[in-house]
Image (cartoon, rainbow over all chains, first blue to last red):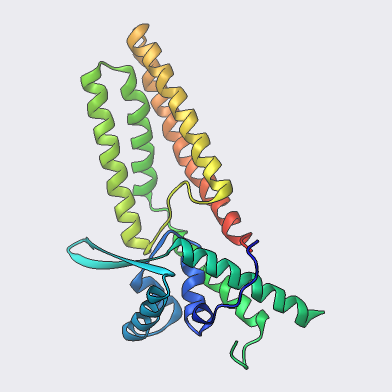
Length: 98
Length: 149
């Protein structure tokens, strides 16, 4: 388990769920994430930009079926930061429970 | 942390997000099973025939794999490769080793002993093992994701 570190960039509403989805797959399509967390394209784009700026997320564009698709993935730094953040949440949850 | 959100609630969001990704992967259309089985069969059986036929079989198998994987990716909106998780990686490696063994057996039986029916039988076995292996891999992958800290 990673050393617990609270990360405000990851923890923000919406971004925690985005990172959780991305942690369970190598890549998730933009539209799939948008539908799962029930936000608009523009709101998700802002979250993606913030995670990208932090170096936690990478974006890949690919043409498929005659249209452009955007794929999102956590970077190695993003995976490390997310694991550390979840460790911190687990630690805090333990304190609250005890 | 937002004042209104407890650590437990945040952890529940994490679990929900992971489950949402896993839920998308629960998609087993007939064409994926058929394509994967055909690709495994061609890869294994093709080795028992003369080189030109073997090369055609490998080429067609790779083409099938690329097509079904792209289609599955487009339909589900998620992608995961076989070697990223811990337990599931061993299922992928295990299947690879078994298929490799069947390929070598096909070469020996088909090209060296002239027993053409052996590569064909090996191909049929590989088709079944491929589909079973894929299911085992997914089951282990779910365990991997759900046991993440």
